[in-house]
Image (cartoon, rainbow, N blue to C red; front, side, top):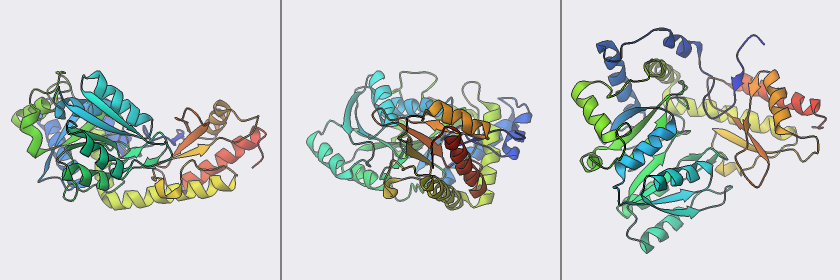
Length: 367
């Protein structure tokens, strides 16, 4: 194998050589040049959601989940009540971390093969006036299902409720426009659809709620209000920033803009997804989701109904051929997942389909 394996996962994902090379330089965390990179990147990220007038962008060290936790702790008062729309594993994680921070949580369950229901949300908000915030996972990566962000945002605005959006695997690919939908916080990360490397999250916070966030967080390191205030005052991060991750993301965003921004990225990922689904369906495997619910981010597949099937063997055989798959996240149905995002296109996706076909054949599973 003369190249690194291609990561068919929802992040970390395959990056370009330009992005990798950006990490070869060391940066001083308080140096003016590095602070300029931070300021420029914060502004560029706001541009992607058309949020310059309505939101601020607060970066944070750590994985995307760190930033989800930070957003909830910063935005929701300590005696607050959060409703979590749950149709998968990452929704459940959001509910758990909210609960662990001492906020009251109401979980509205949905089937994993269905999108969450704005109508049901409306009914719940009418029933319980104590709910102050709603938590939505835009693309539930446990299955790949796309949830109706715009419709949920409308319901929340109509009822005067704050909306916290986990847009981890959608930001940069799926359209999100702060001018037409209201959200108090929207969370994303460096190692997803922007095609940077993992290690940094970031949160869009609505300017109108900023002052009210002071003192909400019970964490020093994850207080986004404090992080924002410090950055505005000094241009610096409060604590040691992930310098190499930051400059890699800045380089990745430059390539994102060159490619044509969000519409171009969505077009490439949509083509990747179509290539994958067309190819693997011809092998006799079935996607878990209906087409209208499938986001072009990651596809969940029913495992072959064959006694020889074993995911670990499939994983090893496809890795040997240069592709890394993702295990299923469902508890009751055996599945595996294949990502469509990263610095890859139709050729790589076609090669991935061939790798899966060869792996199944090697396992004695006829396709």
